[in-house]
Structures are given as structure tokens and as C-alpha cells.
Length: 239
Image (cartoon, rainbow, N blue to C red; front, top):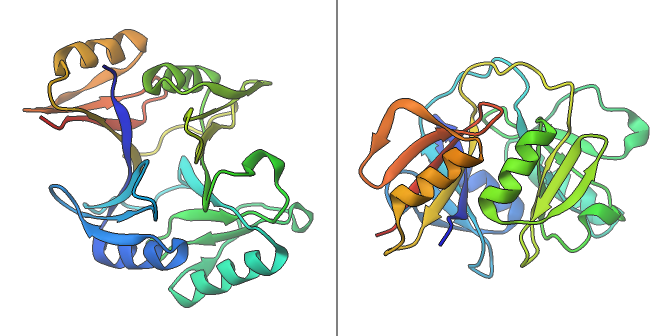
């Protein structure tokens, strides 16, 4: 049995404030985390959660990953932007062009996210969080496709995207050039392995696919790892 995506995690100095912000923007319910931190859960309770873990990571460069939020209408996009601003977001400039149509904001902790206009065919049917859009290589897209057993739904000009067979949020990688990594990522993926599954075997599978161990970072039932692009992720055993 392979691991599954259980959470998209934010390291932050303000876990409770971030949970309130994203709960308000997405309409997801806040909940205490299973260990440390706090989470917000999708309305149907299925799929991944968004977790906010205590741990300040200085903002030194544009993040390697950000959310693309979807809109069902022009008015819906305006409402999402207005709600985010009311909850503490701010407008930022990352080089976007006016004709591109999406609105770029930063959450209260400075993490970038985009509100995509209605009619985006690629994100149709994905839900409120259309994509976790990442700066990354084609190799890392292939790695995560195998690691999560999610099929590739885009593979063109070294850009890749994957999506769960059950649908929902896509994870995308923009291909080269990939900016050099600057410190620890604020956002990382958390994988979970169900009780009774072989934790060592799953760790070995991920290593064989191209992951690596974070030196000295393994505790009972939890492994801290890097993907082929050097992005942190965790594997935890639920048993």
C-alpha cells in the first residue's frame, strides 16, 4: 500500500490566524490537528486538509508553491478577492500582466496566491483550490506522479501536472528555468501511510523514485525527506 496526500502544510508563526484566514476565504471548517498545529478541512471531509504548523520561516524570496483559487463567474472572482482583502490579504506584484486576468494576493503571512478568472478550462471541476502551482522541473512532476500514483494530466514543454483519480486539486510544475532554492520552503506536502502498512518499505519506495532523506531528520513513524528538486516533504505512519 502506498502513501496518500493527507495535507498541504504551511510553516508559520501564526497558525491560528492563518487557519482563520484560509477558513474564511475557502469556506472550509477549522479543526485541531492530529498532533501539532491546526487545520482546515474541505466541506465533504474527503481528500487533503490544509495544515498550519508552528515554525517561522523567513520570507526571503517568492515561494516555490502557491494556490490558484478558482472562480465560477466574474462576480465570484471579485467576491473572493474582496473577502480575502477583508480577512487580511494584500495585493502584490509578481510581474503579472493586466491582460492575464488573474489577481495576485498575499495572505497575512506573506504567502502568494492567485484568484483565477472564471472560464479557465484547465481548472474546471477542481473545486475552490484549483491547483497547487509549483516552480519545478519535469523530473519532479514525474516523481510525484509515481509517489502519489496520480496520473499526469499535462506533460508538455517540460511543464507537468498531476491530479488524483478522484479529481480535485491539481498539482502543477512550471518547468525550467527553476529559481534556486532559498532556505526552507514554507509550504510542503505531507503524506500519510495507513495503519498496518509497511513504513520502511514505503520509505524505500520513495527513495528509489528519487527522494532523499533529510540528514538526521527521522523519528518513530515519521520521515522527513526531499523530492528530486530539494523540496521538503514528510511521510507519517498512522499506526
